[in-house]
Length: 292
Image (tube, rainbow, N blue to C red; front, side, top):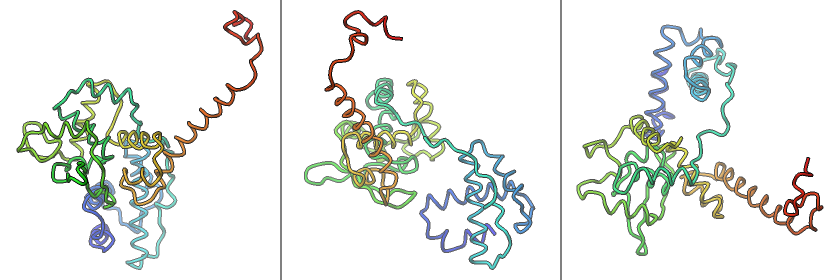
């Protein structure tokens, strides 16, 4: 069943990164399911596979991928049996997702990792471009161009193939200018000009975060960059362009959050224009002890 899906038009038309991810996930399912026939799988079997994953997000990914296989079988292979993955219990996930870096955390990281370090280059590229890990691993000089006298970086997001074309901010431009002439990629393996694999890059960056005493991740930097734009008044489409998203669904989350903060500020400014509070609440007059 999995082999037939991997040979399908749906799979072959996916991006290279999406294909690699699906193959890895399906290979895991195949190894864990063993010899259990596809048509004999029950809800309990799906949930048993889900339980082998470390967290709710990964477990729900198993449910999603298996449901996709059963739907494919029904649509393309005349399978008329049940879809047990459809009825497997979905686990509750943390809706906040990855931690969004704060400005103080970014500053602490930059203070720990100075100029001309790989760690500094990585965080600046991530903040400037909003690249995901898999895109950042292959990012380099070949993506840079000059337009109207300004440096720009353009790439297509591996997960969705959506294009991004962004200006390069001065702080990142300074670090790029300091790269060795023979180095094309922004971030390379230790003692090599070769790129990191996605997983090893994530592990490497996590260690740099630990050294700086921050709880960050590359995805959290994408969120931080989008938050910066929203707080600066960027539109939903401007944020979507930064994230290389095809629509504004996710960008709307950031603009709404920024708008709520601004509305709260304006609301409290209006409170400040009200008449003076009661003397019992006037701390400056020494009546703080009256507050219960």
